[in-house]
Length: 86
Image (cartoon, rainbow, N blue to C red; front, side, top):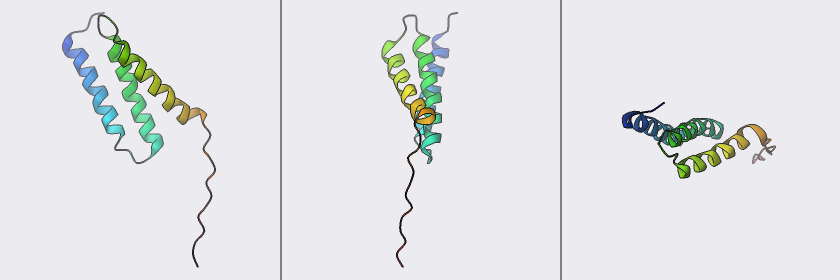
């Protein structure tokens, strides 16, 4: 399937917007989830060119793996409550 330049650009702009939007999230898990969506779109974007754009694909696969690790595999460290001054 062949995509026009406008379609490819639209995917790239959507990916950029979603990654930018992710940095406004207050929760780190929400940030990583939204950022992962942007990375997935960037990976698709990288494959839409006649010759796959490997720097875009490799970078975003790496970021997606890091986000996935922290979202699904790494167990949260226990937090110690702060002592209140009396």
